[in-house]
Amino acid sequence: MTTQRTLAIIKPDAVAEGVVGQIITRIERAGLTILAAKLVHMTLAEARGFYIVHRERPFYESLCAFMTQGPCMPMVLAGDDAIRKWRDLMGATDPAKAAAGTIRKDFAASIEANAVHGPTRPRRRRSRFPTSSRASSSAPGRAR
Ligand code: IDP
Ligand code: MG
Image 1 (cartoon, protein in one colour):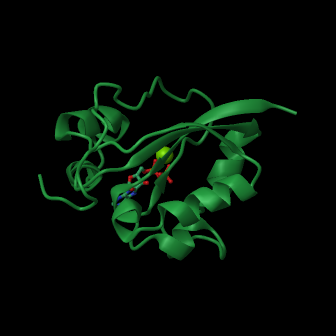
Image 2: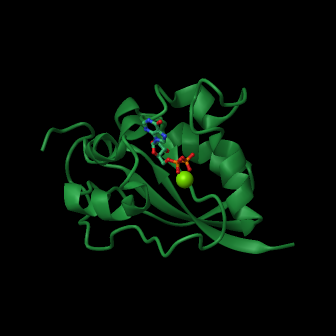
Image 3: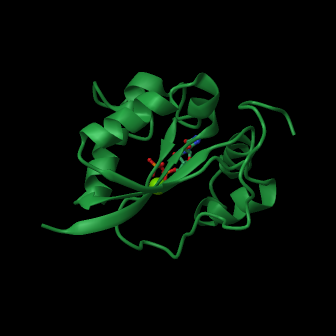
C-alpha cells in the first residue's frame, strides 16, 4: 500500500458548468481524501508557468488562455495509490477517447476544455500550483 498525495485541478470549464460538487463526490467515493482546496483565478503569467512543460506544443497559448478564463479549483488529494486513482477517475485527455464513467467522458467538452488536471506519475517535474494566486472572489466565468 502506497499512500500518495497528488495535485488535482477542477478546470475553469467544469467550475463554470457547476459540476464541482459532482466531481468532488466521485473523488470521495473513490476513497481519496481532500487535504486542501481553494478557488483560484490564475493570471496568464501563472498559467504559462504552470504549463511551461508544454511550451513547444501548438496548443500552449490556447491552453493558457483557457485556464485563465475563470476560476479553477486546485486540490491536494491523498490516499492509497492516489495518483493512479485520480488518473483513472479523470479518464483519457481527449473526452472522445475517455472510458465510460470517467469525469472527462461525462463532463468535458473538448481535448482542451477537459474538466480536470492531474499528474501522470510522482514528481515527473517540479510543478507546483502557483501559490501567489489569490483566492478568487469572482463569479465563475467572469471575464477579466
Ligand atoms: P493530461 O491533462 O491528460 O495529462 P497532457 O498531454 O499533459 O494531458 O496535456 C495537458 C493539457 O493540455 C490537457 O489536459 C488539455 O487541457 C491540453 N491539451 C492536450 N492535448 C491537447 C491538444 O491536442 N489540443 C488542445 N489542448 C490539448
Ligand atoms: Mg499531463
